Image 1 (cartoon, rainbow, N blue to C red):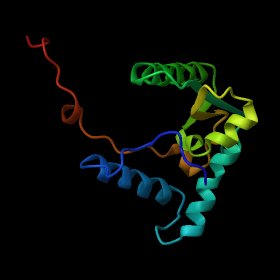
Image 2 (image 1 turned 90 degrees about the horizontal axis):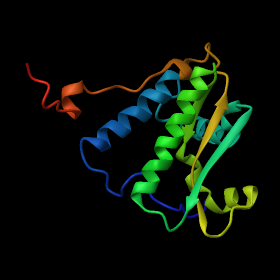
Image 3 (image 1 turned 45 degrees about the horizontal axis):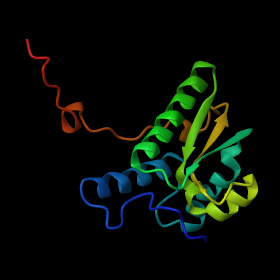
Image 4 (image 1 turned 90 degrees about the vertical axis):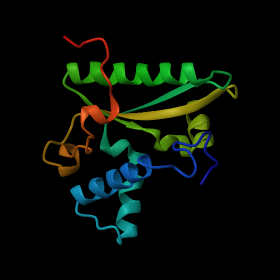
Length: 154
């Protein structure tokens, strides 16, 4: 494995985010009947990232290494726009920060200049509606747990 360009999650992730991340993984693998103790099956599923989960198109999102958090958030917003436009046109996507684990491999493959870095990848194609994993959704906290609406009171 290569040294990632950045930590996808902070080291020593704290609560409640640690539990949420763990539960998300457990629920995802449960949706495709892979038990926690079946490490080879989990690794095979993880490896499907390398094939963009069978999608006909794989995208890479990169940015200049000198850019900071505001530009990183811009890339995230751009990716979301691509995802929404794809759905509008009958396509589906899967954002894949997995590719941040292989910065040298991706950079060589796309001939990325040294002053740029791989931020994320994305699978683009048509969803297999019969595949249980494509119908799975992460658990959501209630709106009030993460948002406070102010100035809207009667």
